[in-house]
Image: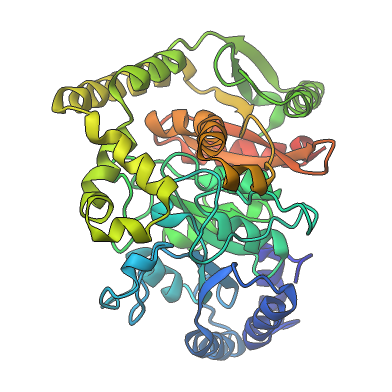
Length: 450
C-alpha cells in the first residue's frame, strides 16, 4: 500500500484490480506491522469493514458513489464519529458523552463511500506545531532513526505520520496555525490547507473558530485535488492543471526566511531555480504586512490564543488542568493578559490586511519554505519547556501568517536536509483562491520535488 496513492487505488477499484474489503483489511494489517502504538487513538474495524463491504457491492454493480468510493482514510481525533467520544488528543475529554452524529465532513465522506479506518493522534486540543502528546504518545516520524526520534509536526501529527507510513493514502487534519502544512513538511507528504468555510466545520472540535480550517494530507497533490472534489460533493475534480509558463510567483523579501536552517534555504533556492528553468515567472516583492502581523502579536497577543482561552478556560483553570499537557496549559493561559481592546485591534487589523495582501498578490502565488527548520529531535523538546516554545514559535511562523490572512496553501516535499529529514515548499494564495493554488500545485509538483 505504501507505493499506492489514493488516485491509483481509485483506478484499481474501478478496474476491478482490487477490492474495498481487501484494502481495508490491508490497512489494518499495516497498522499491526508498523507497530506504532501512538499512531491511532481509535480503530473503527467494525464500521470500516461494513463500509468496505457496501463499497464492494457498489463497485460490482458499476455504481460507485464517488471517485474515492472504497479508499481507506484516517481522521484526526477531533472529528465527531457517531457513538464515539471525540478526545481531541486529551484524556480530560474521555468521559464526555459519545457523539450523537458524524461530523458533517465525515458524513460527506461516508456518503462518498470512503472507508474510515480510525482516528489518529494529535497534539492535545490541537495547540502546538510540534506534535508531542504525553497522554497517547507521540507518533513516530519514519524519516528519523529509531534511537533518535524526531518531531512528527503538529497538530495533525498522526495524519502526517499515517500517510508517510503508507497505511492509508489520505488523512483529514485541521489547520489553525499550520497544523496540516507542518506535519506534511516534517513527514515528507503533501498537505492542503483550505480557505475558511470551504468545508463545513460542524462536528469538528474547535481551537480558534475564526482561524480553524480542515484539509487533507496525502501522497500527492492529485490526491488532494481528488479529495477536495469529493469532500465538496463533486462528481469529479473541478481543478485543472495550470501551464507552468503562465504562472506568476512571488517571494516575500522579509520575515519568512529569518532564522531558517541553511539546508531549508538551499532546498528552497534550488526549487526556485527549477521553477524558473521551467518557465515560471518569479519576482521578489515587499510584503510589509507580514512584519506588521508579528509586531501586532507581540503587542496585543495572539488571536488564536484569545479564542483558545475562550474554548478551554474551564479546562485550564479548573481541576482538569493537572491532567493536561503543561505546555498546552501554559500556551492557553498566555492569553489571560489580553484585553477586549487587544482582541478588537487584532480582528480589525486582520480584516484590513487580508484585503491589502489580496490586492498586492493579485493572481500571483506566494512561495516560501513551509517551515523554517526540519523536524527536530524530541529529547531536547521534552527536557526544557523554553526550548520547546522557541522551536514551536519558529515552526509555526510561516504557516500561521497564512492563517491570519486566511490564505489557502499547499505544502509539497522538495528534498531533505543533511540528516535525511524532509523539507517543505509552500504555495499560498489569498482568501478564496483555493482552485488557483491547487491548479498551480498540480502543475509544479514534479518540478518542486526535483
